[in-house]
Length: 110
Length: 119
Image 1 (cartoon, rainbow over the protein chains, first blue to last red):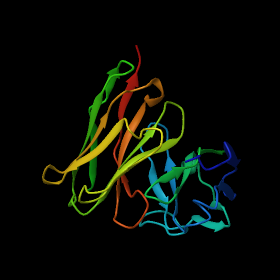
Image 2: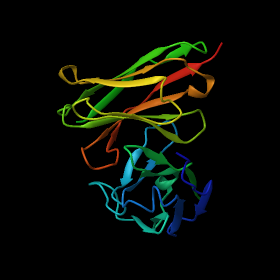
Image 3: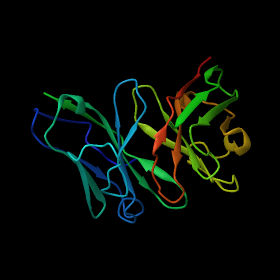
Image 4: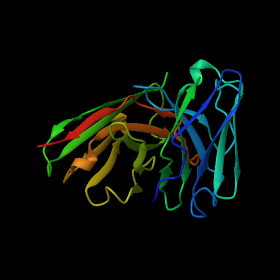
């Protein structure tokens, strides 16, 4: 149950696009289309942003999208806005009824 | 609306025990799979445990297996986490999270309860 690998930080200017990678193994990200992404603002609970690889819950902006290639999933945020500044976590089902999170990425909007 | 409210956190000495609760409201509790996820201070999220909708199946992260027990009381709409043999590494904010059966993601989270293991 090793954590998925995410960059510690990414940054971008308002209006730009950024991508956060999430690298796992053939036992988790590579085996299932079951990666989800969560946004967490300081002092707040995580919020679901993407599920099932690339689906958005109702109410989440279509500026958020995701994809997967092999053992690496990616979250893209387009048209960056100040309120997007937060920590982002990927999570993958890892088989045998276990889940694994990424280490988290701090997004700074410059 | 969906509400998950954790309680039971506090300061405990190494080797001690604590029981966390998560009170659910605003939805029918029994059909949902429930999880505990924790976050050490300044660190990332770590999945801890899951219990099936009917409490018949329970699974744990390697880091807590044998020390933590997840359970639920469907008539009382409450999720529990019994934590024994606590270690300093268990210091964290503990969140309960809801999963629609078979979805494999967490669609609602509580605000967390803080557990501090310290002498």
